[in-house]
Length: 483
Image (cartoon, rainbow, N blue to C red; front, side):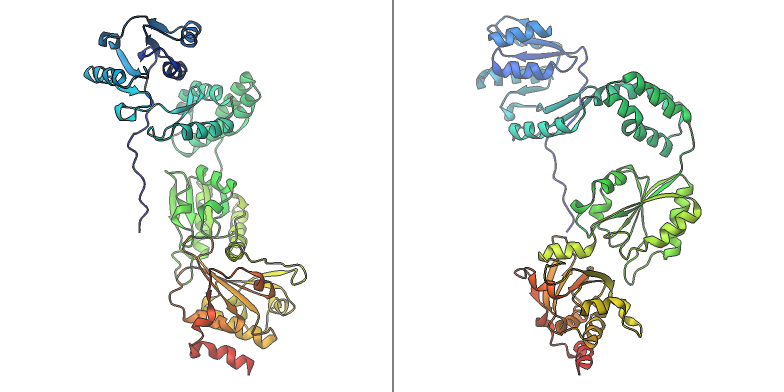
């Protein structure tokens, strides 16, 4: 079922008010709160109040606002671009709202959302940068809580840095072609040496750094980031992965990477699916290598999204070799590999003091050869084994391990779609494992964990594998190995 995006009943905009009249009607605390908010702008503030509390009078005097000390009349709204009804009296506020609408002026009635044409936000002010938080009047306290968190995140130097950026905009548009190079200049401007100088309070040095950055006008080389997309849940991405996705010109992703993770990239980034899942390869590995090299030579910044961790069965070694040979800059960003996510889903300790102190990452396909791989010997000696992509060879895995001496009663945990809301968990023993091959209902990636430490997992929300052991054809491999 497609995800439905909630609809806003109030659409946020930033309205030009420089030199324009904004009228507040009221003389108490409500009027003072709105005066403080609008006073952060360059609007011409007019307060209509025949009687005003001392705090409001002091604020008017200190901030250069004008006051009309007269009984309110609709004529007091003339020429205003916004009106605030802040009298504290519902009938009076309703009358003001009606007068404003009669003059086609948007109106806000304090704490009366049903009378409002617009809502005032909680405001984080880093002029000319502003962050406005609104709740459509439903939760002003919530808006203030969010504002406090955002205020802590944004440096006070952000405003001066943005003002400096405005002075460079024309030159950047003239010297740098539209697209990757210009976007990269601005990314370096706001995250590089100009930003660091502004943070230190040295705007002169920030200007010099920005000029050097612009006038160097060197050709930007491409860069490839091999990024671990994690096991599926988008909130398991690293902060570095998220930042690179927001900076990428191109996102190249495998079929196992969920759309929710790809969607975390910059909205206008080019998205290139390259398949790469069992039985479905839209591009061969050599074609993917060539694509990454080509994009790098074009000067593009690329995020190559790989399910889990790029260095665990992600064939990152081949891609890195191709990029090194071509002289293309690259980096590797680790991700949460599926084994760790599956273990977390089961609350399963992969190592357990007194039981096992080692673990193995492998694929079931390693057992296809004539000789038993070294990891199988480690499993017999007590290591925890995490088997990737092992559903279709489950009988081979179980049969060869039992044949080599691992007990059929060794604990097994299986997870489909680890970390995702729709994950499925199964538990049983090595003797039950071959039943996976008959499970046509398992369409997502399957992770199998085998070992004595698995017995310490939480099996409360998992299904028993033994319930599917009736498939005699699938069990033949195990029975033959044991006999």
